[in-house]
Image (tube, rainbow, N blue to C red):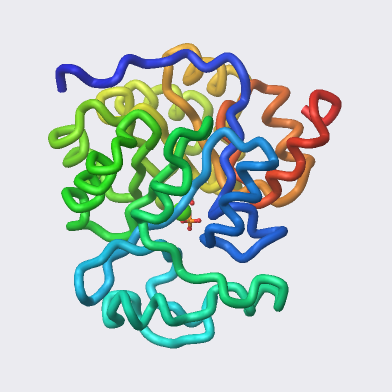
Length: 257
Ligand code: G3P
Ligand code: CA
């Protein structure tokens, strides 16, 4: 994999806004993304899927049931049907009328702004289409792609070597700091970042393993921080990429960190 993006040794925590800021606004909506941006997040995380008629939209679940007033699988609904749904009222009437964003709308909303977009592919087979939209809008330098599927990660390495790609562990996170370090060497062949569920990986996050990954240029992300104790503990140990539902904690500043 020649021409892979140069690794950056990150010197400070980079905070990732998980689906926007779902503790304050409906998840995966433009209202939530803009609010997390205003709160000072470094990356905005989101989830991309394809509709029945071939359009890319933002949705975490495979169905629209939990986060809109509709029902059905994203893959069985057309763009027009999905855009007709209300994605805000389930959270609070204040957000009534929020729409399910298209991927293009999400990208365009942050073009030229000082924030990176962490784009997770939900499902395989949409890699080329995702890449095409990123290139059309000129956002190659502003996105990090990520997937739970190693085949997707490898595919991006082939078709978009200029773009950073993250691998997400599903259940098989190495369970000791030593194994974590060993696995980091393997992951360096594929990814610029790795991510894991916090509760499945806490035991392997020693100061030593965190420092090792940081010094090797492997950005180490974990989700989802919903309480401050592990957040504070791991930031003190040097964790780089906490993914949180509470971007507003950033406003607590250095005393919090
Ligand atoms: O960024 C990683 C994280 O978002 C993956 O989990 O279930 O929230 O998409 P999930
Ligand atoms: Ca996600």
